[in-house]
Length: 413
Image (cartoon, rainbow, N blue to C red; front, top):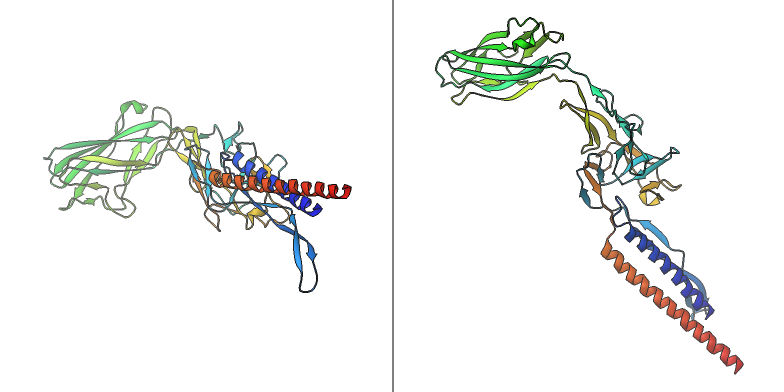
């Protein structure tokens, strides 16, 4: 009877712990990146009855239970947050706490502090690679990611330009079409160049490129380039030939910037003309130039793949860094240390750090967070099971106590 009491007591302790685990799983139902734990029960064998062929075994109850985290994928919660990210597949974000201890997390709800440091929601530094001149070297050592908040991108003078233009072949001689294109000087001032096309004969057009007189210091000659275009019978440009860009020179700018020297490319990189002459309304599309005004950071966001991108007020985008992802062969050996973080234990395999989508690491999805993988229905089922087990063990103790009382009564009788 004493054995029955102790056996049932071990079940009470085990069921109580299992209920604690279920309670923790349910409590973290809405915790970003949370991984639920499961309980492993094991029996105790302490007694063997009889000898020879008439043997029997009586168990001694439930042994010390263990818990194992379930690292299955949580569902995707699309937040559209600029600094939100989730890992789809294997791996962990890498962070460091105030004592420089390396930790791991699946919670990608990141934020920037006043100094531009990329942090977790609870203040740990996110690890990765910071770009140099827009280039990330993922072969280097990882470190804290710092974003240059409030930085200014310098202006860049336009050196090349192009535009896709169709000139209406059905237009009579003297027909005209104008196409404007904005370019930038060395100080970032915008200037509108206007290309004026005039049909001079069948399959032949002249062009002049002009700049507003107000943009010039002396208000002098506003024509900065002239020439002719010739087309074959199929409407394809033949003159100028491929590889012969038109030189556009704008001198004496009113704002004191350096003279503009621009190559107007009439053909694309494959040698296909960007100007055609077909029997449809004249029009321009896809104007392109390589200059830009000065700009400040207006937005920092994490892109798919883990690239950290800055968007400037002048429309330019610059790569600032890359998030690191850690692949760990035995993640169930990690220790939970709070704040959605995990720490390597003595049994944890060496973490392999690298870019997302490589070396067995999962892919990073920007603008999304990973929900808790707690299955509420399954947890409630477990809760009922453990409750009934607890009730059954309690009944065994009650019965054992009753038998003990009966035994005592026999002795006194």
